[in-house]
Length: 136
Picture 1: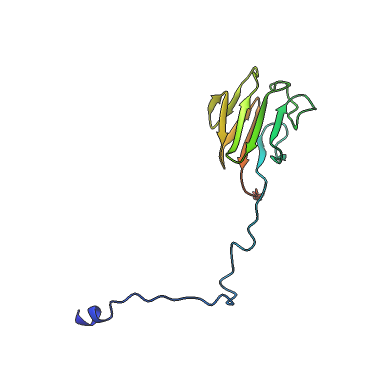
Picture 2: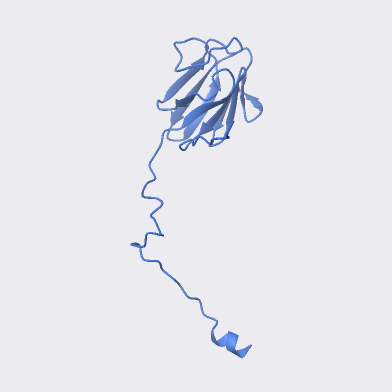
């Protein structure tokens, strides 16, 4: 026991930055544009970048995000992006806009938020989406 008390010190180990086993993980980090990915619905797999201050969503092909299904209103919703974050607003659609399981008139989007528009389920990501192969 006495031996333990004598050696009771904190030791700090610093790995040299030139060591290949200690890569600079933040060096490759870059700012990325948020995206909406269709994870369920007729266009599953499509990914849309939220790269403008305002993005429109609807069945009309003139929308930034065109969702071709009768369950989607012509002008269904819009996404607003500014310094404070990203917000989705319903534009008086017939079937409504749902965020994380709740019907909303307007709601902030956070990394991992799910958005339901008609038969489409979209996932909002603030970082690069990685496709995982399932072997199917």
